[in-house]
Each structure stands twice: as structure tokens, then as C-alpha cells.
Length: 360
Image (cartoon, rainbow, N blue to C red; front, side, top):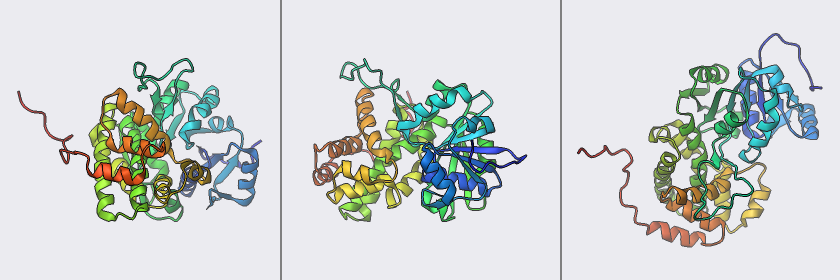
């Protein structure tokens, strides 16, 4: 039975996941005059949130109803915003799938990859990790459900600032213009701008890959190397993101917009970013496993570093920043050694992915 159930003739919008971003999106939807149901997986946590009206340290809007029954979300809502970590996403969608119909609209806000390797498949040089094993979240939704109208949110959306009602913007990306329109209608207000894009995969890749660079930027800050060094790192990181993104099916244009460089700047320069915080604390000498345990929510960057390091070998894309961060988190290189290595790496062209093709 749903907690605090309301009788209303208005359409109800669903949000799955009561983390910081999910809660912020639920509040924005509610403030924009939608009735919102917020699904919380843990029954005790759901009761606590409903009683205290606080989720992820954010006060819940009166129009947000907390529920603990997953099947209620698709039963009551046509539009659903899933906001859960990538590691849990496929399991969630599998549970949700029997209750979803082709008319549903899913706009996710998960900035991570789904890693799905069969048990019998052993990753070796002859059997590398490929895009067959690494999916974006929209691809997981399409694989596991009958839903056609799928979209994603990506952009500089630090949840605490959204909660503090500071100005921000995001991109709603989908192959369907209707999904973009729905996202804009539900989320846009005077302080939250909503842009649209048809490049769903490209926008998703932006949101995922910037987490790698955010971890690295955190180490620069933690070593107190200065703003010049951080800016150098971020700009080289953007170029690396483009090369990886192109290899995985995205295009350069997405990375030069709000979901790419916009999100990159926010997550690489703010201690509100979990991934930046991981890098900062690593540079201060803390142990990675202890850092991860102490975080309230998942920092997707660590998982993404591991995945992209494998994929870069499979697709023969040289990713010096990702390779170096991989060595740091696996104790194969110190942060000081990594800094020295990257400062001496032979980056040849400042930028070349936008250069025109040579004429015959």
C-alpha cells in the first residue's frame, strides 16, 4: 500500500531512486506542479523519509509522495525518471519490465555504464571487453523492456545546488522529439533551463566519461598544483573524452555542449562532486576502499576508469589520462609519478578532432 496516497485528477510523474539527484529532480517536478511519486527501495528508509519529509538531506516538496512498491510506479505513471546507480540499474529494470508497456516514457539520470559479461566469458587479449559487454543505460532499457520512448538527462547538475535553488541547466536527449518535449515541459522553470538533443548515445557518453576526468582533477587539487595545472588537465581530458566517445559511437559535437564541457567544468572544479572528492582524497593519502565506503552515494568514476581502460585497448584508442588513473587506483603508480608522467607525455596536437578531412 502506498504511503500518504493522494486522490488527484492530474497526471502523476514517477521518480525511482531517492539519492541526491533523484530527490532534486523529484522536487523540481513537484515545484512545477506535477504530482510526484518517489520510489525508495528500502522499506525502513521509505518510512523514515515519509515521516521526516527529508531525502538525501533535502526537504521534500509537499507534492512528493514516497512509496515502496515498485510496480506502483508504472501502474500510476506514464512518465518515469529512473535515477539509480549503474551497478543496480539492470536489476531494477528487469524487476520493472513486466509492469512496463510501450506507451511508457523513461528518462534516466544515471551517469554510468552497465557492465554485462557472461559468466563463461573470460576477458583476455584474445577475448577483449567490447561494446557488446558495455552498455549505456538507454541500451539497457531497450534490451530489457518494451519501452520505445527512452531519454536521458545530462549536464552540470550538482544536486546540492539544485536543492539550494541556484540556476542550472540540463540536456534531455532522445531519438524521439516527443520525449525531449515531455522532459522540457515537466522540468523547465525560471532557474532550470532545459536543452534538447537527438544524440542520445553521445549525451550519455558525455555524462559517463567526464567522471574519469573529475577524479583526475581532484588529484590535481589535492596536490595543490594550481589552477593552471587543473585547466591544462581538464582541457586534455576533454580531448580524451572525445576520442573515447567517438570510438564508442558518439560524436564530437555532444562533447562541446552543456552535457560535455559544461558538466565537465562543474564536476572538475567543485568539492560537491563525488568523483572530484575521490581524487582529492586520494591525493591526500587516503585509501581508495575507505574513501568509497565513506561516501553517501556511488562515485561512478572509479568503475568507469576500469571499464574504459579495458575498452581503450580493445579499440586501440590511446587514453593516457585514463591509463594513468587506472594505475593509481590499482596501486601501480603513485599520484606524484602520474603527474610527472603526464607532464612529459608527448601530446602532439593541441586539438585535431575538428580538423577537416584532407582532400584527395
